[in-house]
Length: 378
Image 1: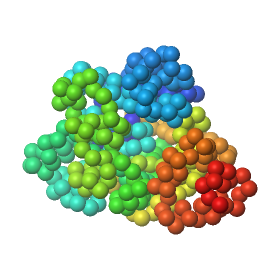
Image 2 (image 1 turned 90 degrees about the vertical axis):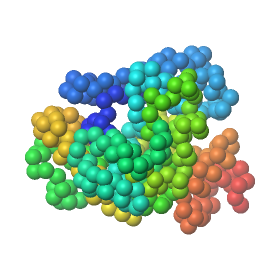
Image 3 (image 1 turned 135 degrees about the vertical axis):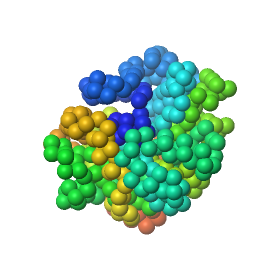
Image 4 (image 1 turned 180 degrees about the vertical axis):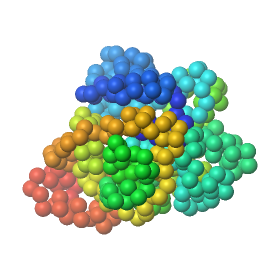
C-alpha cells in the first residue's frame, strides 16, 4: 500500500492513527519508508494526539461526537474515525499541503479502465500510465487544464470491490518484469487479486472515498467531518455510486483479501456485524471482470527507486507467512437485541435478494437462532 501510493499518487506525507486495541506496531515498516524514501510519516499513537475526552472509556469519543454514537465498541470506533479525519485535515491544511486522500489500507487509488471515466483518461495520458510516477496527480492537472474535470476541490472516488479468487501464478509471471527474482508477487494485493465485481454493482462496491484539496478549506476551519465518505456537504459531492461512477476518471480498488487477512485483526469492533464470515464469503466470489491495469505500477516503481530498494521495501508485504485462522465462530453474524435492527438492515443491503432468502432459510433450521429469539421470523 505504501509503495503503491508513493509511486501512483505520489504519496509523500502520511498520518496514521494507531488503534488502541492493536497488538502489533507498524513502526518498523514506517521506519523503512522514512529512511529509504524520505517519506514523512506521522504516527498518532495516543488519543491525545487528536484531542479526545480522556474520561470516555475504551477508546474515547470527543464531547461533540457522543450524542451521535451508541456506547458500544463499534460506536467508539466510528467516533474515533471521524475525529481522526478532522484532525488530519486540519493538520495538513495548516501545514500548507494540498491534495489529500482519505483511504483505508485495503483501498488503492487507480486510474479508471472501464466505462465512461476510462475514455477521459486514455485520451489524456494513455493506458499504461500507472508506470509513471505521480500518474493520478498528473491526470488531475491535465484533465483540469482541458476542462474534463470540474473545478471542484473534492472528488468522490468510487470504489471497486475485488474478491478472493486468486490469480494463477503462471499468469503473474507472464505479467511482471523478469528483474524481480527475490520478490513473491503473490503477496501483493494488486497481483494476487485481479477479479472484481462490475462497477455497476452499487450495493457491493459501497460509497465513494474523498480526494480533497485541503488548501481550499480555510473558510471551514476548524473542519468538522460529516462521515468518511462525504467529508463536508459544502465541499464534497454525493458519495453514492450512481453519482460518482465514471465521473472523474479514477477509482479506489477495494481489496477483500484472503480470509486470513480479512480476519487478522481479532479486536476489530465491527467483527460479527458488517465484518463477518458471511460478508467475506459473499464478496469472495467476485469474478465479473478481470483487471489488467492496476498491477502495472510495479515496473514504474522499480524504475523510480531501483530494483534493490524495491525488493527491500516489499519483501515482507502482507500478513506473517504461514498464518492461518481456522476459527470462523467469532466472525459469524452476532445479532443482539440492542443492535439487531441496524445489523439486519446492513445485512439486507449486503446480500443480493436470492442470497438473503437462502441465508434466512438456513437460519430457520438452527436451534439457537437469534432472529427467532427476538420474534423477527417464525
